[in-house]
Length: 377
Image (tube, rainbow, N blue to C red; front, side, top):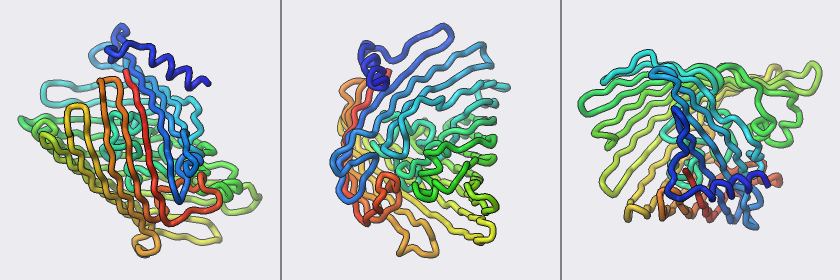
């Protein structure tokens, strides 16, 4: 009921209002509600009967103390079937100190819970207006696997810089995170419901994220290289039993070209995962994923998009572990505050399918209709 009360409160804000002004800063908010209907597998709730368990509500603010020190934060409630329970959490909260800032370059550091630069869309993945479709590209952002908590933000420090040239901008960020305890939801998403019951606790160890990005001609062409290294430790419930250590490292290559009516985006990722299970032995596999997306702006208010995704959970065993997704959809924004989106998805393979929404096992093929309404101010 609290979540629906927030949505109702947001709806009372005048449509012309794009932000709430406060002394030295602004407050923004967003809310979106989705409906999913699928065949084959469930996706975010019992979508084979129709699910409304895709809901995002956020409130963020920024406040500038002076020319060098700024504060920003966001509260978020996200419901996504069994992968996310809708509880209210601090999504990010950091102090931003700019040590150098002039017409051509800048250097600063953020401290707190900072957003990780990962691909093109990770930092704004919860806002329907800024992501490419209702569901994020599964192959790169692990949306259906419920791993947003691992990818979106880190508790630690982030060094960033940028350099402006006559017709281009280059930027860099490096995030060094602290160890932190994993929530029960993340452990279930990673290991499955049955295996997670054997785990007493899990922790995220020293996550590192880095990104170089380059834009030309005012954003007409964009490129990025994202790198990451994450460790996960799991302790079992049994005395004397070996725990499980998991180490993941990899990169994402991103490219986008924007024309007057068209935008083309492609991203490719390669992740190496190493498993250490004590007396049970060690293992390693490479996860490879890519997608190609096209967007056509039919008018200032209506756009069409399509995307093809491909991923393999083990490059040495492609035929048995590959997944393909095909997405076509549209967005209609009758005003700057509102948008309505609809997508049709065809999926072959089980990559990106939420296992914990399908306790009786997953099927090879899934077709799904997704509809979502979003509001922002």
